[in-house]
Length: 113
Length: 119
Image (cartoon, rainbow over all chains, first blue to last red):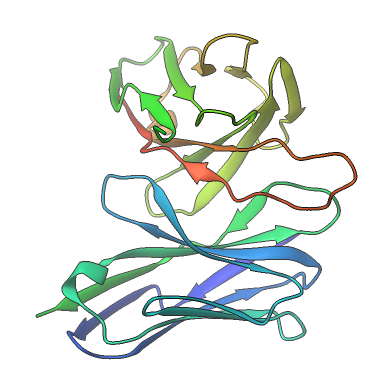
């Protein structure tokens, strides 16, 4: 059974810092891994999707990497801004035909001015 | 193209009542997924449906919960005889149809959620 862990659970940083959020998964037979952002009281917004054959994906100030062999993914946020404050979730889609992702509990990020 | 729509956004029920949560997928999407997010917990998969079919309901509680995705209209998650432990945010997601012979798994697009409070 796939288990996804996110570290740290919470993070508070001053504006401008570069950040690394960590996600680990127990079953390396994943099809893809996805990072989401969740704002308080709202739904999830997909940020980046990394297919199992890829090593990383980039979108603006965000960069996500994937290392299947070690069961890890990282989300790198460059030059953080207060608007980045949210909860960041990673989800692993395990191989074998399942469409169902396993989510971590998220990292709650606060970027203060 | 409107995103995934869920209604109501907030629902209050007393113990023993029924709760009906609706989800309209994005236009052209034929796959619907329901998730539950309990306070201080991660998002947990409940059920995966295609039009008129339940594909995977391995995350659904065995009693009181049911889901459908009819040929016409939104997907419905129904909770009978609600209890306080059902209080949570319920999210719906949708994805486009996949095509035979491909192994592409499409990203899921999430709705804003329905926050159910059971008094």
